[in-house]
Image (cartoon, rainbow over all chains, first blue to last red):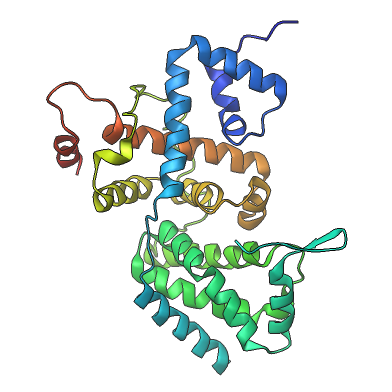
Length: 82
Length: 216
């Protein structure tokens, strides 16, 4: 049996599981077949994957060593008092 | 993340021993847990509240609460996810206080449909990170995630930034697994859409800096 053709809406519904590597083998194959013929969904897949990667790689809210030390000391002194 | 010790057939997370020692009053063991997770808890609190002072208070309150309630921690979940649950609740409480007239919960603004129907389907530059300096890029990412409703923002941060599993995220937020998946999809698509304004391949003469200035 050949791979079932999915629509763009069905592709969207499976996108999260596909990106997380949680889609089953049949769905995986359907998504792969779809993005081979649908340029829009291919762009969406690639740019959504990149969105996740950029947020994962960048430290958007960095805790500076001095602030970290200050917070750490405040936490421990509160804990020791209680 | 700490390594997992293997004892016989059973895998034991190193936090288990630290928590057991902390429960017996060993503050050095608790201090080690604080060192291990203070950065992540600060990051989560700042992502949710979008306010640095609030995040500083939340980190302190969350660890203090964890210390006071340590006896109640049964070890059914990982210590880290238990701690995250406390920090998320503290963060949502802060948002609620800030907007006194309005109740803020994980469900806030969840009705928005943006993101379900992608509009911007232009491809991105091969190395979008190279288009901006480090601090400029951080500012773009901050502004972009700030635009997400708290309910979406929280799911995205726990799942995609902090790498909690879908099940752990659901447990932490008191949501079902399908609800987490649905919010995660919308959060990812909304962020993608917003980042496209900065990262898409542009026509001649349209520089990233011009676009950045316009969209401020």
